[in-house]
Amino acid sequence: MGLSMGRPRRQIVLENPQLEEAYRAVKQGISRRRTLIVIGNCWVDYEGRASSKLEPGERIVLFKSDGSALIHRPRDYAPVNWQPPGSIFRTRLDRGTLVMRVYRRREHEVLEVAFDRIALVAVLDLVDTGEFHLYASEEDMKQAILLQPSLLEEGFRPVAAEKPVEPGFIDILGVDGDNVLTVVEIKRKAADKNAVLQLKKYLDIFKVDSDRPVRGILVAPELARGAQKMLATLGLEFKALSPQKCSEVLKQKRGRRLTEFLG
Amino acid sequence: MGLSMGRPRRQIVLENPQLEEAYRAVKQGISRRRTLIVIGNCWVDYEGRASSKLEPGERIVLFKSDGSALIHRPRDYAPVNWQPPGSIFRTRLDRGTLVMRVYRRREHEVLEVAFDRIALVAVLDLVDTGEFHLYASEEDMKQAILLQPSLLEEGFRPVAAEKPVEPGFIDILGVDGDNVLTVVEIKRKAADKNAVLQLKKYLDIFKVDSDRPVRGILVAPELARGAQKMLATLGLEFKALSPQKCSEVLKQKRGRRLTEFLG
Image (cartoon, rainbow over all chains, first blue to last red; front, side):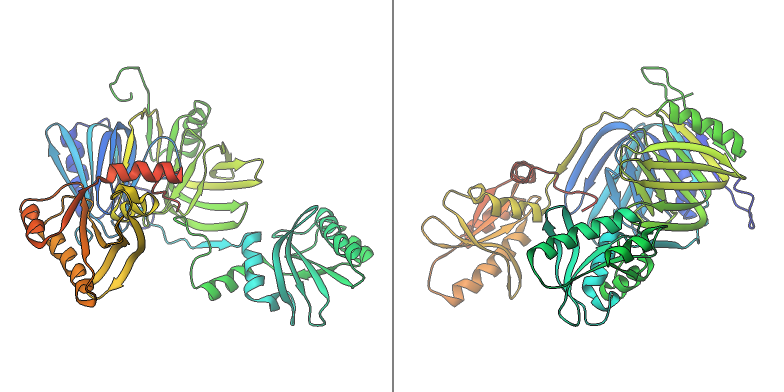
């Protein structure tokens, strides 16, 4: 029986089943568009845009209800083979093996997994409506400011990003509305005293090199304890900016997800 | 009991377990570096280079023995959250939830999954030594020839790839050792009569445009029935080249895997 939730649901779990028994469960699961997991000794052939052959071994194979499929070895985070949503699943018993066929007709793509021993079959009825929120990295925050410099302040113009300087890398170097050189250091969490000292070090490079005034702005969602006083003492500034805000700007400007697993 | 193979192995499968029971199995699995699957209603927090929050829903979570972890929703082929190999797993019972903590200390990265209901726990002892062979796509074959033109013939120099011409796209356009314009059409499987006609069409474009002689070379691992005769009749040539060979060249030249799931 399934999880004790609102609607009645069923799951089938077979441990070390005979191939015939596994076949019946899998076939039913496919026809009901359930999520399937088949674990066992298998080999895999793929023929499509490229082709591949995976020799026998024990793997975890996921068949999702949207028609995507993944073959996972006991190691590595990337699947060894996979098919995108929209694939069609078929199963058959064939000369002492349970064969799972995953194909996309239009793309002439076929992935076949043949199991000769099965350790576990699970036919699942999963409900997942939870939202996923992704907030930006420091790199994303930098990109957001480069794409929309007014996030820092009106009139700001970046002239360089990750400029290599002696004590490390400056996140963004630019000039403000009055043409004053401005060094920007970005933190995605509350900026502490170390962040202030880091910014100070970058600033000193330019103060030594020229008589021009230089501004230093620490960008972060907030300041940690003690950082405000140190900033004021050193004549540096703070600009509150959250990773969330940067995520929104990037989404808007780029029109796509910030981080895509498939790169 | 596990699969009936050479060495004695054990797997633990718990259907709809109490959290305490699941906790004991998971804890043992982690200490023995087993592959774990936990399926149930959960929520996820990630804090590292970026941060993310996944609201409650039913998911499949894989914890591999190399320290990689993947959280899969019932849809999409990409995991919603993941951690690379080398992560450390910890588990605890916390206010009515089973918490799985996946972290990398040096990178200040933490992924936490909290389950309040568990549908299935599997502690697996998988053995997978099978080799994976990946053979090149047509695009890979093209890249291999561009990187090492002698794969086609000595003296060949590519001048364009995927040149947009009227009836489609030419794979490679180049000149041979005698400066004769050469059109190359690539197939990753046995090239049939359609492939020959396709090459002929591309060739005709250049024959109309100039009085220069033009060579047409069909590159494929082999020719399908009837294609050889048609090639000869039309004055075209064949060069045998396998996707495997191209894979090797690319590996050598690029020093990395041809296709990487993470792009």
